[in-house]
Length: 138
Image (cartoon, rainbow, N blue to C red; front, side):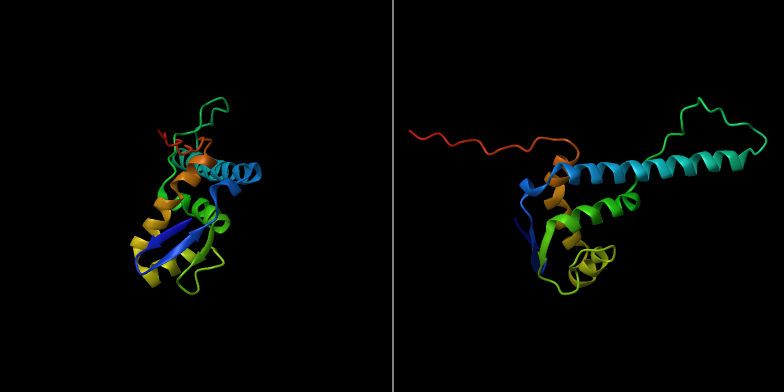
């Protein structure tokens, strides 16, 4: 899929190339991030009150996954799906690629790429892609 970016473009792999192992890796990474945040929140509670015994049956503290937390998830999906970028030094996609893309083309290029990847994230989250409706001919 061709994605216009400010000052250039990118090519994404077809969404149909996503396989169950991609979804497994994606979901596992999201769970790992959430687990790490919950453990950090529990450690912070214990540090705030070292005399209190933690209740093993208590629910873990509520945590949110923020944008910074999602960077490894974005990098994972971009590594699978971004096949070409018209800016040098961005590919192969790694943890520094987002920064290099923004240095070359600005934050708008990353935002455009992220918007183009929304359907991919949807499929990885279990959504069924909307197929184009057949056109009626008379």
